[in-house]
Image (cartoon, rainbow over all chains, first blue to last red; front, side, top):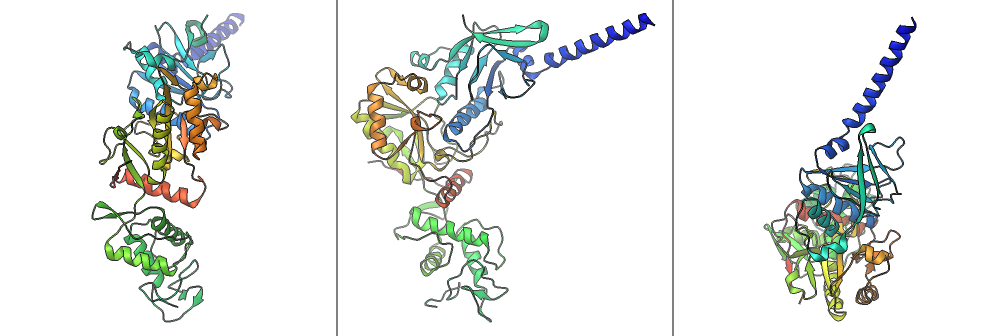
Length: 163
Length: 291
C-alpha cells in the first residue's frame, strides 16, 4: 500500500512537471526564440485608441510588423496580467508602451522605454539583428541595450539591464 | 413655400414622411414623394444613405449634413471618373434640413453630373526646400500617389508649407515620417489596436524629426531636454503660427504637429469618411502646387 501511494505521488509529480515544462516549451514566444527569430514584445495595458500619441505608436508598430517578414515575431504583454501570460521576466520596470527587442545569439537585446514614435528606431534594430550596415545617423535612434538569457530549467526568458 | 423643385416647395426636415404626407413639419395631403426624391438625389451624388424609404429619419438628416459639408468645406467634385474644381462658392450651415440653397445646390450637382468626394491633395515634397520624406515614410497605396508625394487635407496644406518656411528660417531640416494615415489594420494583422480617432486619419497632421546639422532631434532627445536651439525655435514658430505640437500632449509625441479639428464634431466625422473613401475606392487626388 505504501509502495502504491509513493508510486502515485511520484507519478503525479512527474506529470505536473511534464505539463509545466510542456506549457513553456510550446509557448510561441519560446518557440520563436529557439527558432532564432527576432522577437518584439510591447506592453500595452490599456490601449487608448483615441489618444494621438497612442495612435502614432500603434501605427508605426503595426506597419513594422506588417513589413518585417517571417523572421520576426510579435507579442503584446499585459503587465497587469496575473499570472503573466508570456514566459518572460524583466529585471527592471517596463513603462507603458515600452518595446523590447530580443534575439537568440545576439550580443544584446534592446528596450525602448515608452512608445516608439519614430520608424527609425525599428530600422536601427532591424539592421542590427539582420547584420546589415547601419548609417551613422541611425545610432541616434538606438534603444537601450539589455542582456537576455534563457533559463532552460523553467523555460523562461530573463531580460536585465546590461552591466 | 418660395420655391418648387422635385423636392417640393417645403423645407424638408427630420420627421417628414411621404407615407404620412408630412412635409416641412406639416401634414399636406395629396403632395408627391418629396422625401424619396431627396433620398434618391443624395444617393445620386454618392452620399451614403442606407435606405430609400420616404421617411426623413436620422439617416437622411445625417446624409443631408454630409452633402452640406461637401458644399462648404472644399471645392472638389468628382465628374466622369476625374476631379473638377467647382467655382461656385457656397457657405452653408450643417443644418440637416433641405433649405432653399441646399435644394438648389443638390439640383445643380445632379444637372452637372457632380459626385461627392473629400479634400485630400498631394504635395510634391521635391518642391519643399527644407522638408524631405524619410526612409520610413510609407507611400500610400493609391493610383494617384507617387514616390515623394505627401498626402494631406487641402485645409491643412498650410501646415506643411508653413513648416517648410519656418524650417528654412531656423536653418533646420524636417524629415517626414507620416502625414495622412489610412484607417484600419494592415493586411497582415495588427500587433496592437490601431487608433480610431487621429488628426492623421483626416490629413491634418504630420510627424517629423527636426534635423539640426547632424543632430536628429528625436523623442529621446526631447525627453532628456537635449534638443537643439534650432529645434526649440522652430517649434515656437509653429506654435505661434497656430499649430499644435505633440510635445505639449499629456503623453508627449514630439514628432507630431497638427492643425486640429475637433475629433468629436460633424466636420471631423465627414472629413474622415470622405477622405478615407478616396483611398479605399481609388478616387482621384489632385496634385497641388505649393507655390
